[in-house]
Length: 284
Image (spheres, rainbow, N blue to C red):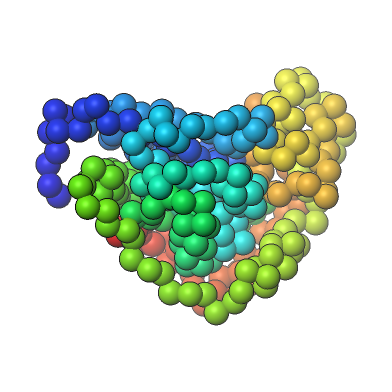
């Protein structure tokens, strides 16, 4: 890997925009920020996980380049993130996208995010994918437990350096094209509606008392959680489980879907060991 001197990259301003429900994407975003700072780059982080933050305006003209970070839900970036991107003007700004995923269904995400960003006048120079504990582990699965780990962080650092080189290069080099998926957007939109069929009980505390800190309601990415009643609106909940992950008393939960874990592995012709052994990847 080519070494980069601090004096070569100042002043250079980068913004990292990310959505992180259970913390996986934030961990990668923090590693990228730390590496950029070590290299002398001025870094701003902007978390769009909450509705109020997605309603704030970002002037991309204030930055030299952009990192976007999203989890993968139903083979793509979450709908709330895609809808947010559709309201942005890239101003021909160079950007990169990193995904986190729980070991299943990741390939179409790169293709569709490139298509979306180009529509919004961003120039995509690279992408990356990082293993992260699956959201449904909160309901009994065992996918990519303990990820991202140190091996993923090393890839994140390498990704940061290689992407920064492309951000700063005189000549624009875009990421290679991704293979077009065999299913259209319309089919993915339909599949997205059934992403949570296994979760027959959305996050709830089943009437149990809690301290009513209101974190679950305040942090809910879609404003679906009613903290006082301890239930969510099923029409708007995206089962990201941010409420469960952030509950200080661990009283929120869903139904136990542990009995579907083996069937999920068989469906994808894989094993827990194979998923645990998967590596994070960079695409240039």
